Length: 226
Image (cartoon, rainbow, N blue to C red; front, top):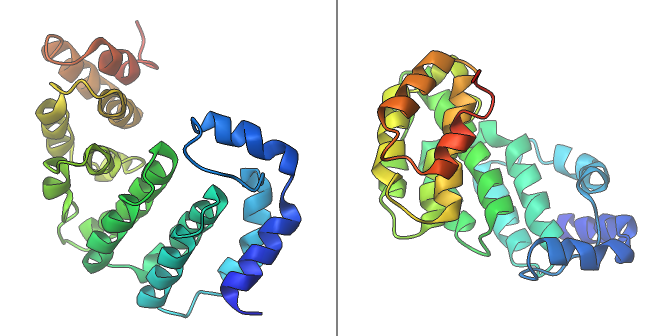
């Protein structure tokens, strides 16, 4: 069966229509849903996505773009599952396409999922000695706050690979913003790095107490000893 027809078949088979309305309400009514919870979605599409391992990056992105155009939100989540599974086929040259995709039908769920994919690609580039933040400086300055959020979050999980100077600089560059999703992202990024370098994050948060919002500080220091 053709891939997109097969995705439609497995998602509709896994759907629980009774879950659709609560899922839509959780996303503030911005998207319609089939009613497929994340575990069921991943299980339903697992074999289909695994079969894409040799199709190449351009084909993956074409599939993602087509899935993104479907009205039900689960299709965007399948696209993210697909890209996350096959991110090793992507290079820094594909980051602009990933960012462009993230701007479509953007909300925290798809944006944060894309931040992880972009982060995987850039972390691999950094380990090869390349630019581990390619395109992120521009994203940090972009008018679209969702791209600024991706820039802030792209180092999540990097641990020892984290460029602390870049992270702290990005946090201060956006610390003046009132946008909830930016303030939350700064705190999340700092909290994640604190798992590797708690003293550095505490020192940073204390040194810039007046510039960081209370929300950011609370998130950053959430798991730090009081």
